Amino acid sequence: MTGRTTPGEITIIHEPTVEDPFLIVDKPAGLASAPLRKGDDSAVTRLLHDFPDIAGVSGRKPVEGGLVHRLDTETSGLLLIATSQTFYERIIAEQEAGRFVKSYSAECDDARAVPLPDGFPPRPSWGDCCKGGAAGRSVFVESRFRPWGLHGRAVRPVTEDAGPAAQKKASPALYRTEIMVEPDGGGAGRARASCRITRGYRHQVRCHLAWLGFPVRGDSLYNPSSGRTGGEGDALCFRATGLDFLHLSFRLN
Image: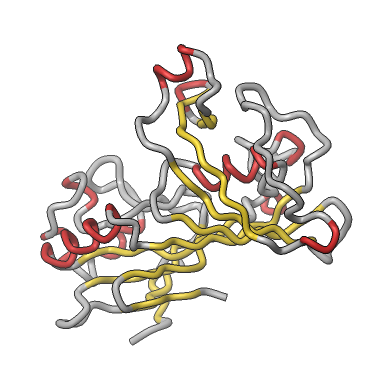
């Protein structure tokens, strides 16, 4: 059955079958993907009641079971969870080979005229994308990342021009985000972004959007002008909308 909603507003998009032993759900904003400790409230914890095979998969951490990838707590959208070890190992191999594609949509502020927050390198050169008649073209943004701020809650891009201290703290791998930005008819100074990645780092898409000058609305970590206070009207306008792997494709509106 698809489209079934569990308590806590987790919507089941795909239930496991013998041929396709995995679960895809639409996780609501405000719910963690996985517990830090056994019993913590999370999408995985809630789903274990109906899908106990999740716990039988040896994933990255014992408490995560077959969780293939995480979403930030504030991010809503598609999560993939394996219910068999064979499928988990197969999809991780696909991910490492760059054949597992994750798509995101965001409502953004056009902040290209605003100075970048502390710790960001100069904005990347991205040609005429999103200017005049060129709006809607895709660009690729690529960087390494380093932790930033109190307790490393945020991240910052690290380029080859960064100093030795930043290089030492940076991730060993490069992370690439494909971004397409179009004007938002809802008002001046706003835009909509569609993004795709095959390898993910914490906050990668949100950070790369801010670096380009299009921070996500309601993003207290990467959009200083959001004025976020934690109220309902200040929700993070960021959603995981697509998964493509093997022979399958899943999309949210």
